[in-house]
Length: 249
Image (cartoon, rainbow, N blue to C red):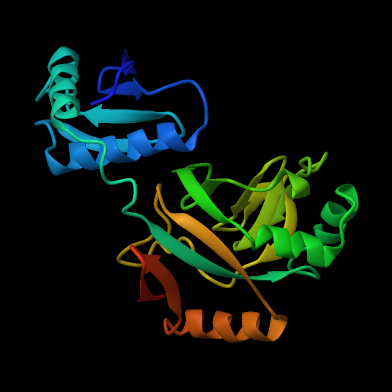
């Protein structure tokens, strides 16, 4: 299926498949297709797949299959797979209240880039962001595709606590803190949606390969959505293959 895939041992029960040495939509598309192909025909002994920007960590049970046999099984799957499937993605809309107590660094981001606050909001909501991988905390998605017009360095001194739902910028990246946690990103807004709920049947809202679309809302709308989320009545707007689907939180 793909040339130049490298296999590297990563302990006695995992290996890494490397697809390149850069962050790109093309490489990440190959990774998503490969994950789909492996999940459709999983090798015996496979326990978990962890996709990242440019690689996949493959976890397996060494009492069932050894490193060499796992590599051969993966190679067989790759050679029989196709490049299709990257167009099968979701766009998840994330309502966000910008500025004020929800985004205390919004004015700094605007000043740093010689823009108005409204300009920053317009630019930030003007793109769909590819979720390359999950990490850092449960449900934290690393998003690509942010305009360099609003790129801003991290805080020199990280905050000890950032409220869950906070939307931030760090250099040329943007992302959402799913839970209360430390962090050094510039906070420009906050969403009332839960990205991580350990008590939910599906605890993580976003998946690698999804696209995130931020939509600007007022504080009144924020509080209304937050109340609906707490009652498990809010419906997340998800566009899948051009069709709108509402997922209840």
